Amino acid sequence: MRKRIENCKFFDVDSAYDFFGLVCKDRGPYTQLSRKDRAALQYFMREYMYLPNTFIAKIVGRKPWHVNQTIERMKIAANETRLPVTMNLGYREFIEYLDDVLREYYECRNVELSSCTSETEKSYLIWEGQKASEYYEDAGVDLTQIGLAKELLSILGLPRDGWMADAIVKNFRIQSNDAFDS
Image (tube, rainbow, N blue to C red; front, side, top):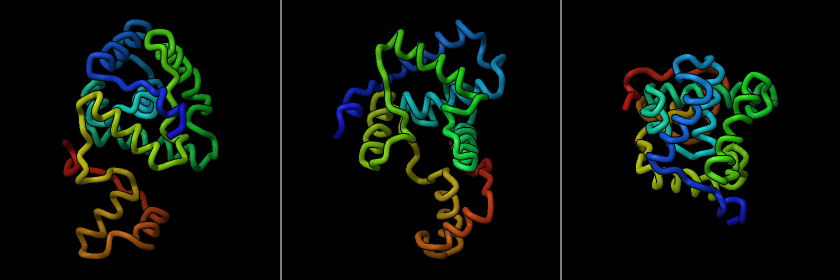
């Protein structure tokens, strides 16, 4: 494992709430932040603090599937525009601010989860984030578009893996509903 991964900091419940409190104290209540800033905060907590969506949802007062959907949409838009989320002008300033808060108060420079090219490293960061926060993602349903497509195929009695899931994701947008609430 690379040194930059080994040096990442993981946040327990208290530290995550403290971070959220610092941001709200400086920028105002969460509900009064702009939609882009709220989305950027959720993205940052997942991608740089490695917090599980279930925990992020609890912190910000949303459903876990909604947090996942917000982050997924940001990644899809970034992929379509070929501009990383962190470089998008709508999010960049607030994400830089959040990064500054993380560096100043927690003395850490965490790696962006999406920038990990190794699945082993990405899995390590996700698992360590879950252990530190003591919140664990429900492994039963993967709420990414490919995960939902595989669930759909499974429900229909078709093989989960293969070309069909890719074709569904390429041609359709699957919307989560209350069945996926935690």
